[in-house]
Image (tube, rainbow, N blue to C red; front, side, top):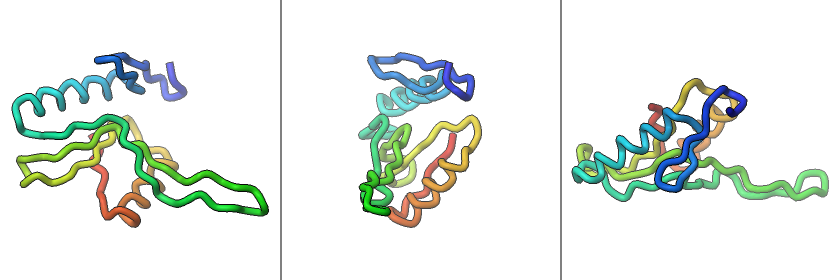
Length: 110
């Protein structure tokens, strides 16, 4: 169990943070097989801010790891970044804001 009472789940050799996320992966695989979406990727990382030095110490880059990315052909091939949410944490809300600011991408919450 994780700190939010989710149960890590293994599907196709990939560990998902929750059963809900694993189920969504299986749904997306079916959509891809039906040629409704394409280029499904799992846990793609986006850089939100570069690494910096603060008070003489190097701080790592700020990153956001999306649950899924794909192109949705129902919407003309639009690029979708999707995050499976039980509830929003403050950290996620900030990263969602930075995804829009830095990459002009609105995260789809499912």
